[in-house]
Image 1 (spheres, rainbow, N blue to C red):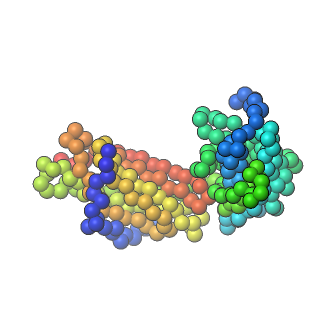
Image 2 (cartoon, rainbow, N blue to C red; image 1 turned 45 degrees about the vertical axis):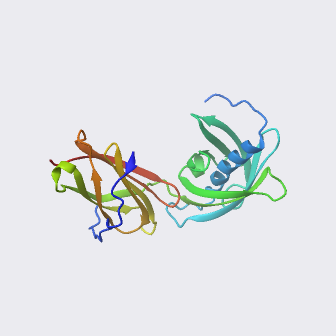
Image 3 (tube, one colour; image 1 turned 30 degrees about the horizontal axis):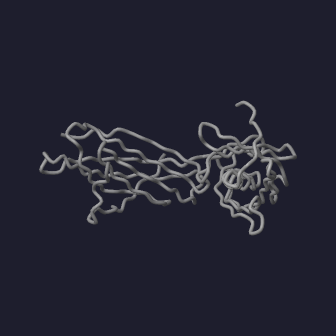
Length: 257
């Protein structure tokens, strides 16, 4: 499979649109690599708990420290308003690394899934927290990491409004080269948030992809060649907000003859 239609004459078209709308884990010693992966997971996870209670506020940057001992026991300390300390356990689930962090004061639990790209769920006070973070090993202790993350009480993913697709068969028709005009308005529940998007139009053996980040309406004019046996294209649009809430829509586009 290869990308088609990437010549420099292809253009972004200015556009304006009206807005509408399970079992216990066995304890095993952790290798240095395990510590790194798990701490990276817990890092973004702990960081994502540092917000005040108001939903949909300005994202907050939180600092915290995670420690692991040779037996695999992990603890954390964090800055307010997240709980001051707690414990963490990890296990692979469905082939994906998962870390569960529990506050010592009983205020809630957060689960982080993934290694570099993390997704979060929680309970109690942290049920709607989402965030993305990074961390670095301590210069003198490789089992200690110092971390920061951008977090928010925001569990709402962005949506595509006013999605429109127009398809034209270019001449000569026997070449089956199609021109597509695709327009949409990425919209988050927080209007000031920039939304990251990835647009893919797939013809089976060939595809066109465009991506970006914006708060404004988006429009592209794309070209793609469809094999003789293909009667429709597949359009997929993925969007994410600054704290990692993600949505995806996919639809078939019938090709004119």
